[in-house]
Image 1 (spheres, rainbow, N blue to C red):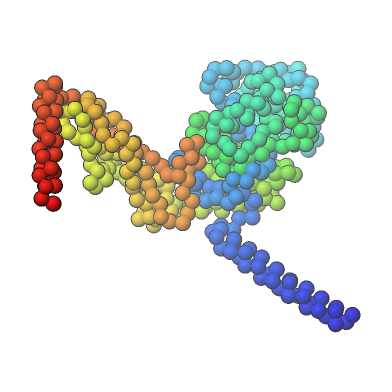
Image 2 (image 1 turned 90 degrees about the vertical axis):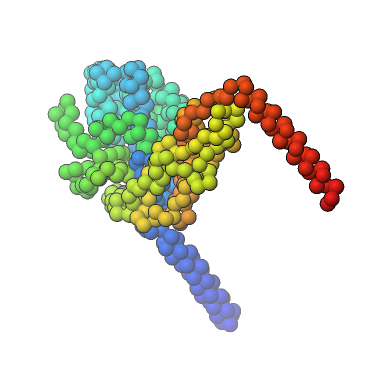
Length: 438
């Protein structure tokens, strides 16, 4: 028995050594490949202008998104404002459910009095600044008649915006069990909204790009409300708050037991804007410190550089053939420059590549006619994609004709036809005679 015990002990020690060695090496390798060493379950950093991905970690894993869901509700509200379906001054009378939800313990809220009217602007500010859940549901009911209908709209809008790994079950990001038995029809009582970090960044990018005024509200550190109280923005990285970060002006935090702590942040300095997403940290403060790490990484290591000038022509492909024109070819060039946020010192790792979608043109040809595009090939080791809906691996700019070409008159075309005929005939004769002596 003692011998058997010794053998068992030796086997266990060997197994533990192997286990530690294998997984220790794996963990070390993973840490080595992550330049930032973030503890968040998922993260992403993008250029706020072009959507270029600068850093990512588990960016396509769908996770709980919590109150960052409200960015989509904000998008839909702002779209309704722009489409004049609702107005900022429009009043919403608070019903019994919204009133009870606004006073539910443990939820982020601003108290709303039953039967009292609040403007859309008041409810929007309560949602965007203090993440007020009852105000969010009130806006959802205003736009779609019910939160059930609004959730359908959310999922449709998410798909329209190019999101891929998502599912929305309510307008707020709460667990459905927190909605006092009024969770949207067709959703599970314990369900929560999910999105990937990439989709969250894509949503934030579209929100800021399509409705830049969102930052006017998102950047407000404290909201004075009609009840006489002042409500602090949960983005504690805004000016004057505990984790103040230079240039920070948005965008949305979130937290539930399922989602952990999360934040979508954005900051602008010296004409450079970055958008960051941190998802599922274990501690509230960590989402802010790791957002700082992400944004510092962006501001310290990336700058916008013009890699392709306006009017760029690829050597040997400066023109394209034109049939039936006064000229037999026309010059082509890029319509605009390519300027991209790139890592410092990596200019030589980007090379322009011409992709022609038309091999020739037929007169008449207009100036500015698109014949293809120029893209960039990257030979470095960083991320290469863009967050934009098209999902291209590289930015693309049109290549166009630089002048017009008129159609040749019938006499010139006839002479060319005759010339081509005799040229072809002579070539055939030469080939035949050459064949006799070969």
